[in-house]
Image (tube, rainbow, N blue to C red; front, side, top):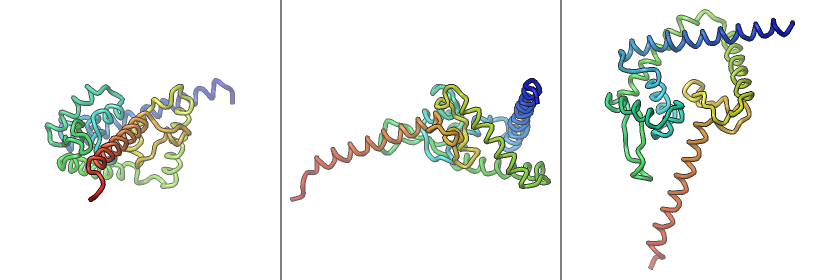
Length: 212
């Protein structure tokens, strides 16, 4: 097979992948979300709800890193979800100056309705396909994704939002890199948080002094 023919096949594959993603996000997911929530929510809103559902409480910086936007843009998006009572803002226990975001009951219920509707539609669309074909296709797409990440100049700056789609797996990490940009930030914040807790506990202990 000559090089030009191979390049043509690769471009055809990438073109098909892009069209599939456009159909999945722009047609199926957006239409389902509109059916469930009207035009009040966007796919970015949905991703935030999924992030908090899968990962628990997060702050604005985490949301910004996950979406790949500025803190100001993430804050504006979160404000809309809080106003619609899909998210809650609370002061962090360890640091009252820090604000944590969590999924409110309305957001949780909306997410469950969306996922149920999506699963019903997917079952109708792909139910006739052979399960082994689905597994092979999934594995092949992940292999291609890891290849793209591996050949990226700065893989540590990439976040593919794997966690909300692949049950907390991270393809950046699986491709041989330590963590994606989002996970790096989250782990660094956890280390800082535990360090602050330890210092607070030490100061608290010294004030109490020995018994007796």
